[in-house]
Length: 364
Ligand SMILES: [Zn+2]
Image (cartoon, rainbow, N blue to C red; front, side, top):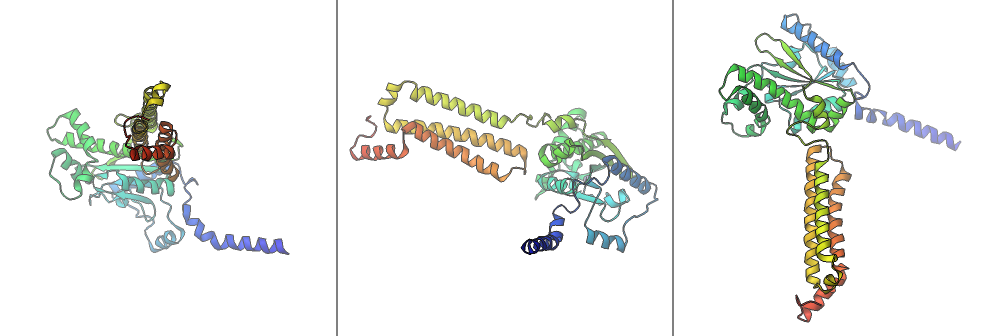
């Protein structure tokens, strides 16, 4: 009788908690919905209809509203587009409710919040395709090219476009022209893709696992056509982290910190322990200073190395890593204080005694 009661309880628990558990991965990020190329074709077809004024306006009625409200969303693409009112994405791709996961921001840049939104669309909702869509005559890119004065929070927004503008100018010169603007608009699309690939572990892993395709595109304001640029030309090297301007895949931060710590440890050993007799004659105060200087240097190396690596990982630093990051320098500090003095408490007592007897800095 008792096991039956247990089974009934377990089944009831499962049934009761089922609706609560399901939205955790509402759309099932790992259940394939369609291939990246099928998703891309769907966008191409939608844009052709829009461009030829043959829109079907699919999936926009009350029934669709209710369906997606109750069953949850299952968009087939994540699109990063410009806030520009002339680039309405659902119209441009003739798409309906619940089809496009849209991130719209002036200049279609990808900074922290945009990357978070992209991660939600691609990793959580599992869209097989990510499109970064620039557009002709983009005001944000123009402002950066012309060096226009911007105020409020706009400088922090447009600084994402600066590298793209610089690359375009390096190729075509400083003078503003339509050619320069178009080159910068394209570079800006590549820049956003680069920022996502290099700053988002979740996204780069999905691309590596062939679960996600990222393509660039540019929308023409006048004729309504989307020109597809394909994948980032340096995608392979961006995925391995070898892109210019970004840290290589080698954990240079950890390697540098390790080397720095070793050098300090070696120096400390040579200066303090190598000559045993000299060490024994050394004042406690000197040992303390030596040990703490070494420990401080090691802590600095460790913290700098960890900070460097964490900054490369973006928001994907797990809690245990932060705990370790604090524990390692603390342990180094403790270990070197112990090494330098034999025992912290012991040397503390000796220092107090020495101070009391007026022997500070005179040895023994
Ligand atoms: Zn724009």
